[in-house]
Length: 611
Image (tube, rainbow, N blue to C red):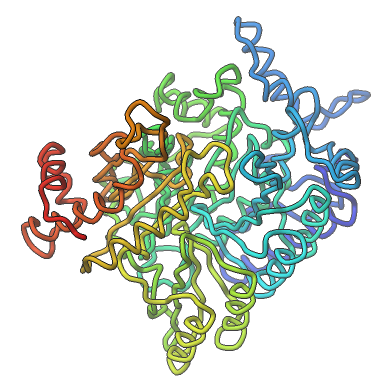
């Protein structure tokens, strides 16, 4: 493979043309041009000042050398590289295409560290849970077109399990992909305009944004253009791959559906601000270090950015992380731990040094508080900022839709909208630009394909990872367990407020259990019917988690519950809330934070049985 960032000449030309078209579109809309496109075919797209030209007779510096230099420094300091770092050094993942093609031709799955390296292509060999690949996609900002969804439905039928799973990064996954179809899926994605390189492994995950960007009556600023700019910047800068560990970036426009940016390594939060030396306007507040699986949220840095600065600053942050992230301990290899060691001031100084300029700082009190989000804004019919148009939020059973449902949703979007579909971090999607006169028809057609547009409070806030049905790390079948809980609760009580229930299968916390109103993490627990026998599937239960203005890490309520007891405990906890809240306006999270854990536990254990 050539050195042109992993793309051939035709692909380079396409990307250059796409970026140039993006610049033209931004100029027409009065937005700053920040892609820096327009160079000759094969030239890397860059932001800011170009790299200095090599001296006469000197070979150009390999941009990937920064990773080897970081590894060498840590080894010289007495550290020992983890297996993943050795694997990346021995075999650059971008150079594996021929090897992957040969494996596909032979009908073989990867072995050893090749399992890890193949994740750089978004391909996860998930044995022993399934003897197959899972393919993670990339949709910057969660935006997808109807024709892409229709094409994915065909691919799911031809090469995968006939369905797709929505994820908590406004993304999709295809599962049950055979060994011989790895390349068929990857080339099929390219044919659909979906570039998923870096969707797995030690890379920057799908860049998320507010799902209502451009159509939200309450938003401060559009974020989808920035997510796309960030996405294409990453694609064209190969040195931003192979980080010490995975990395998340999100843009929140201050509207009615949160992007959960405070759970990301880098969060950009739109705020309205003004101060003595700060012209009034909309800025992005820079927050860093979110990783709720490690019980931490992104925290404000005191830096305020104009929109056109965000991508450049994000790239500088990633470069500082590349140089200084831990490559000797996978448990400490996230940005949070660099910040814990250095403090925010030192880290921002290093970012400024990388940029070659200072960043704008302002006290937090110059920023107006973000307005509260609509916790059920991702479900049902809602008016857009465009008069006479609406978006419809569709609920999936724990994030899964069949290929027929995918085709049905694409057809609905084409017939009544304009093909504009948005994935959300709540494992569902929105169909945009539906005229008032067509809302009832859209609702009927959604119901006709077996989906719901008006989910109750339980299903609207039910989040689940893949679980043991498709992940080797998970200790329980979380998706099936989620549906069991929902069925049990719905048959016994009715909520009049939204409640989020998050089920995650292991310590990786893909379903972000710590930020749920009720969070459940799977574990092998003692069998109450046979204390001396084998363990059974179970969960630890947490309550009172939240994000944004309700930010908080859930507190453990029960440890080691067999799953047979979990649905009843969830139901009695919710009934205790309905019976003991101070008023109908007291949210579930406020109730569980007001009442001590011991009292909550007692309420659950003494509440009337909901048989």
